[in-house]
Amino acid sequence: MKKIIIAIDGPAGSGKTTTAKQTAKRLSYIYIDTGAMYRAVTYAWLGSGLPMDEKAVASLMSRINLEIVHTDAGQKTLLNGKDISEEIRLPEVTASVSEISAFGCVRDKLVEQQRNIGKSGGVVCEGRDIGTVVFPNAELKIYLVASIESRAQRRTLELSQKGLDFSVDEIKKQIAARDKFDSSRTHSPLRKAKDAVEIDTSGLSIEQQTEKVVELARSII
Image (cartoon, rainbow, N blue to C red; front, side, top):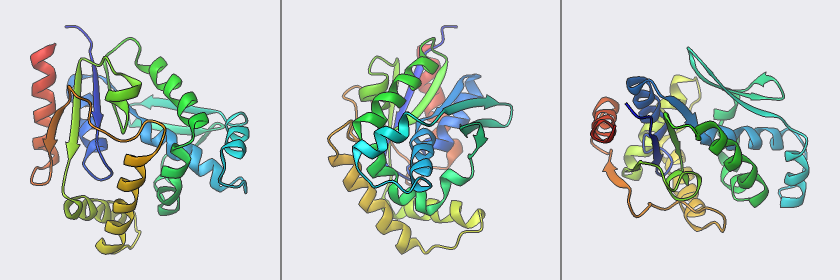
């Protein structure tokens, strides 16, 4: 069977990460979490003491080494050799990642890295600009959507399972702000590719939405 590129895009909390992971596992593909890469840069910026401007962030980009390592336990995100896979999910990282991700110097470097990982196919890549910018020629493009209530409840549960206590209303406000920022940014805004298949995950389980993506992929390969 041929190895294709599956691009999964959508707003925060729509189920991209878990669906992409499960799809990759079902198809024996490599999973690429591009959001983790932007979160890693944000985590590095938070610890740098630098201002939130592109010149400062560009100088930071030249000093950090970001690696995506695929293991039997899943993708690991390494910053200068240190595994920060858990730290990048902290709320303070989430609060700043959209602003950091909007800088051209960040996107240019990470998009190049993402394309190198997926150039041979056999990957499931998820993010906000995968089908429009990173892999515009992907054989299968998926755009996940869900109500903000559903997304906030999912994200609150995820944080709760990690021992972090946030209300649904707090997370809802954070998601709404991120949606607005991501959709209006200058570089690679969040938008649905013209040839993407839209899936509303509001009333679906992870297993159901994964099955939909796997069926679409198998119809191609």
